[in-house]
Length: 123
Image (cartoon, rainbow, N blue to C red; front, side, top):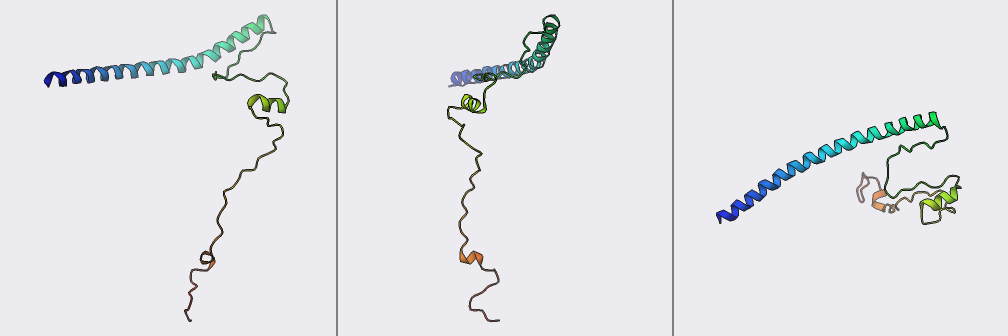
């Protein structure tokens, strides 16, 4: 039994060491990602400025964050075409939508009566 407990204790110690190392690696990677997110737009602006100086018709870099699966729509689309671009459903015939409020139940007669109203009480 002692040997088995020893192997579990060793496995636990190894897992705890690896967890600490993995957390440190993750923190370093996140810090590096933050640095790159700051550096890349700056480099893009510098490159754009330098290319505009040499050939003014160059295309400007897009400094918005990258979203996987997102593609911007083509330019000069009508509102109806943009609605179709962003949705599988045709939204061109949809007007403004008014939010639906949940139905409230009608108050009972007891709820409508004042609290000091007592039946059969003489004053």
